[in-house]
Length: 155
Image 1 (cartoon, one colour):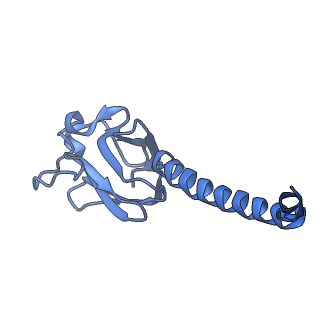
Image 2: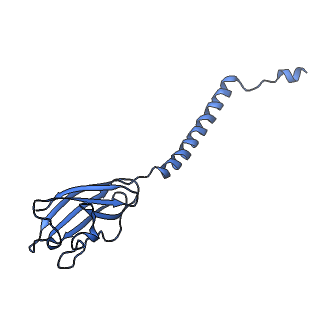
Image 3: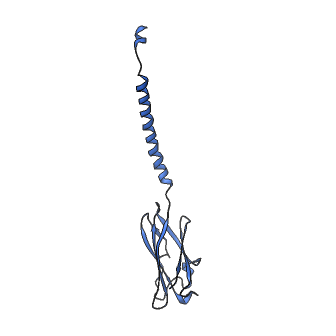
């Protein structure tokens, strides 16, 4: 009986240090795991219109160039473009000038995170009631349901 009582357990200080070390290790592992899960579900798209330039061509038609940058963390897919709330494909002369150049928004445009892309619109003056000095509303719609709007004055 004396031999059993003479044995000693781990001191309370050492036991506390071991418990704290285990708790910290588990907390760090859980934090990394939760960070990985949260990162998958918190991606977002954000398109910034860096510049929008309108130029009048010699034949009187307009060319609009919009420089876009995706500052979000997910790839943005632009699906539609609207000029004054009318889809580009149905706007005036279908957004095509006499030399048959079409806007590159007739198909979806994907912009990866951090990428910059230029979108061009061509407006035929004969197919619309637009004139120089008119402010038009260009709206880009994305697959995620976001709308990016820019007001541009025709020169």
